[in-house]
Image (cartoon, rainbow, N blue to C red):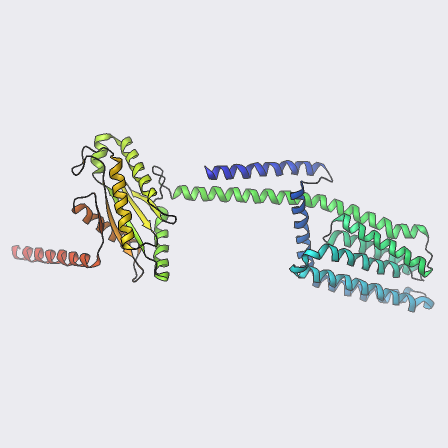
Length: 438
């Protein structure tokens, strides 16, 4: 039930995101609710910050190549009387570009600085663009002014698309840079036609803003699709976990079954050998269950097994395990218990079954349903396997039955060795008798 509720909640959230996705596909600008909107911008900034860190080396190489090509070209195409002035200003603009590049990289590289990333990078954009625009629009050569306007346009669009800032923040930074540039040109006495100023400082800013809005609209679609994929992964994970649980669950009693218990017991053996925290294994069998089925029918027999399973669960702590081993047999794993504690739990289980007085007229030991329990302990002092440990508990169960049933018996190594010796002696005597007879 809990799993179904979780899956239904995920499906509902996924449907809401799918509806948002349809709206986003039909609208260029559509804001999410505040929480999802904040998540989108955080996700976008994180992705672009990672991109900046990865792309720093290629960016440095491209910048160096650009300088190696543009500097000689500027030197050769600039009028001789303006060459020293214009090339010097070009070098100053490149310096501003290097400062912006390395400052942005430093902010992206250090996670502790990410909280101040927006403010610092916005300031860097304003500073770098102010320097670049001021010096490139102060060139004396007309050819240098034209090339400078193209560089300004590319730098502005780069700030919009690759800085990781919101378009509104970038727009404010670029407009502040434009205002500072105009103030510098006025102060320096540089006169440029209004159309050059508007194309370079305002039109490039508007183009960058438009490109950023288009890119973000596409990124919003990608963001919503990624959330849908994550919801699908969670749903499939829950379903897969549910199917695994079903494959390891007994359909009648809803306890575990043997499929997953073997690995669990092997892990517990290894854990006990490492940390010396003992555990107990209880092998439980319903007494005269075949006679019960013959007398009351299989439906009543199933109900009896369910009640036994529920009884076992009532006496388990967190971390303990109960499984239906097969037929009317159950196995209980009690973690981190001493032998005295395991005996008390075993007796409580026996008493609980007796108090329920599940009628069993065919039983030869009581007028109600009873169980027998074989108990074995493991404290990690020797190596043992899954099957050997179950065999010990099964032998203890055999002794409990031989003692009259409706009781528990603790497996004892010395007693087991004594019984083995007795069995071997009897076998040896039988062999000798057979030889004499032959």
